[in-house]
Structures are given as structure tokens and as C-alpha cells.
Length: 92
Image 1 (cartoon, rainbow, N blue to C red):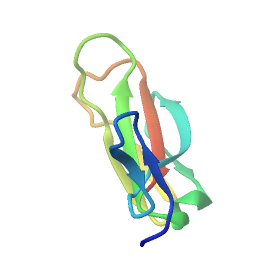
Image 2 (cartoon, helix red, strand yellow):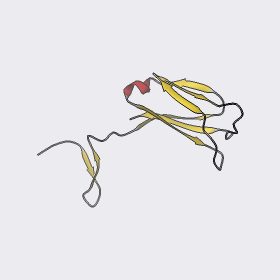
Image 3 (cartoon, one colour):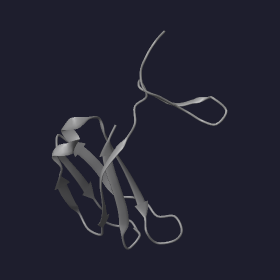
Image 4 (cartoon, helix red, strand yellow):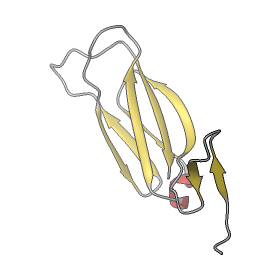
């Protein structure tokens, strides 16, 4: 019989298994201009990010890239962006 960590819901369905990849949020920041941040945590897994405009309605997000331990973002000239964006980043 296999052994390991599993989590079941009330109906007995597996909702988390040791072989699942779970994300870990490293940080959340608000961005309003071009910039970057360094986080050693990026070396602990596969990096991900999610950028959400803070203002209501739809707005484009800046160009975002991750290289090594550095996450960078760039607002392109001539495009109307939200006044600020919430940037959530982590690894899975």
C-alpha cells in the first residue's frame, strides 16, 4: 500500500497529494513605475507572477520578466495603465 501525505474532502476525494505542485507566495507589492526587485526565494522553485490593476475596469499590465533572482517590470510609453498595479510573485 502506498504511503504519503494526502488531504481528502468530506466526500473522500483527494484534494492534495504529495506529488501535487503547490505555489508559495514570496511577496506582494504595489507598482506604479518601472522597476525591479530581488528575492533569493526564486531559486527555491519555478517562479510565477500575477499582476492585477488596482483601479476598477480593465487595464493592461506592464511587461514583466524574471531572470535568476530578479523580477523586473516595464511600463510601455503611450499605453494607458491603471494608476497602480498589485504584483504577486512566488514559486511553485
